[in-house]
Every structure is written in C-alpha cells, then in structure tokens.
Image (tube, rainbow over all chains, first blue to last red; front, side, top):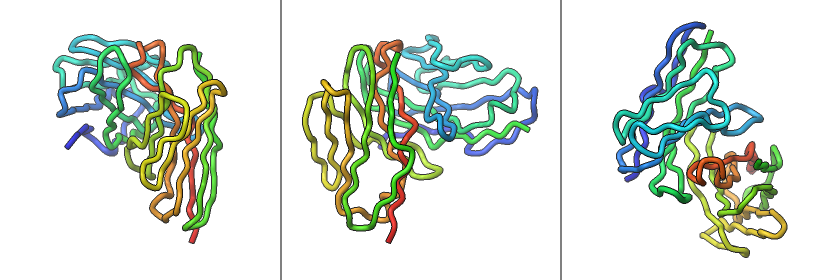
Length: 114
Length: 112
C-alpha cells in the first residue's frame, strides 16, 4: 500500500525557533512536494523536488527551505518560525517524471507558532 | 498564471445527488484532478479527466469541458460519509506539470 509518512501530526513552537518537518515515502517516487493549507486559501505549493538533491521553489517559498538527501525523504525547514507560518503542512509524492501523475499525500503536520 | 474557482460550501441531503462545479484558467491544459479531503485528514485522489466528457466511477462521476474551462464532480446517492471538502486541481505549468495547483475547495455537508 502507498504510504507517505510525516513525522509529527501536531507541533507547537515559539517564534524564532528552527523547525524541521520530515516526510518519508515508501513508493520510490521521484517527485516530492510540500504544501501548506490554510482556510479560504486552499493548498499552496512551498517547494518541490524531482530528484535527490534537486529542489525547486513553489508559489510561497519565503521563510522556508528544503532538503532531499535521499530519494525517500524530503524535509521542510523553517529557519526562524513566525506566527504567520502557523498552518497545516502537507507532504506529497508522485511517481511520474516530466508529466503529471496522481499525488499521494501524508496525513499532515499541524504547526502552531506562538 | 493559473486560476481555479469552486463554490466555498454546499449542503445536500442524504440519498440525493449533488454537483460540485469547478472553473479553471490555465495556459496549456494537461488534465484536471478531483480530490476528497475529510476534516483533519489527507486529500485522497478521486478522479482525473484529460478528455471531454463524463467519467463514471461508482457513485462518483466527473465531467470535463476543455473548451469552457469547466468541470464538475457529481455525487449520487449521498451518504453521511461524503461530508468532506472536494478539491479541484490542475497541473502547474511552472513546475513542468509535476505539481498541482488547487482550488480553495468546496466543503460539502450532507444532512440526514
């Protein structure tokens, strides 16, 4: 069965803290994505990666960075968390390269920044 | 750029039929996806349309008109468990069509 696992379902952090959100997929997918989801705004793409060590900015990359050292793992990093980064973060992966494939999502990580 | 519009909320009765509309604007069309998302859970894939017409999958059907930039999701014989958000999405051209651009979602409430 397809599985995308996010390390933490709920996190509470303080302003200025460094935050790591981890995502692992067991499907050998080339593409991995980080979205954030906010009421009324839908899902917005932060970063994506189509190969190991490759990363591309999405629509809202400011304040975030990512790391993909291994094919199965894609990490989202908030260098200095701010209250406007309080959100639901969703990781996804897909199998096809250079074309569109179905996205498989993790359960999400709900981050609260105080 | 890309733009997707969906109604924010809809309410329907158990056993009834509901149609959730989606209009989109995109440069270079490469299919349209529908996802279902229950509260607090991950979105899950429902359908993918790349050609015009209706595709039926059990109680759920999805329709596409490329010339009108329009799609709808049709849910028949509604059940309480169909209460969820329904997300319309198109491939994001800036990402080589790898990522998806999502609408804000339509929250469907099914009432007894």
